[in-house]
Length: 113
Length: 110
Image (tube, rainbow over all chains, first blue to last red; front, top):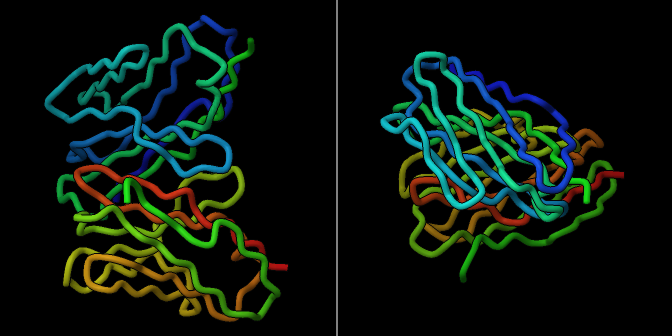
């Protein structure tokens, strides 16, 4: 089955700097890659996603890139703000859809004011 | 409602007791998932419901765990004879293309 690895597990940045979180996956048939933000005491919330037919997607300060050949995808947050502090999860979905949805182990991001 | 609703938000129980956790998915979402999240860890898939199809129970860790779903609405996750290792946040998600999660139920087994 699919195996998703996420790095780093913790990340601290100064306010205004950029943050990058990376994930790799093992199943070349995976075709959908969402990113979730989980604030303390809350469930994960979808923040951005990318499909395998796209190399990059951007939404304001957040962008995701996908390298299908290398089987890795990354989340980029620019001009970080304290409210960006949270745990971020990547995920990969297999080509059969449905429940074949594999999560990374999470990155705890702290933005220092 | 506007999002996935879970209740209770917190549950403290004694070892050996049964607990029932509830999930109200987003209206119109036919797929529903339960996940377990242990402290500081990622999301562990438990069970998946899709419409009237037989649920995928492949993630349930033991026969003490079971889940039901009424049509395409409410789901309940039941843990019998709870153990301390069951302590975790249990998250429910419903799906339209991607997962939309509830806030979870934090279960503490003493």
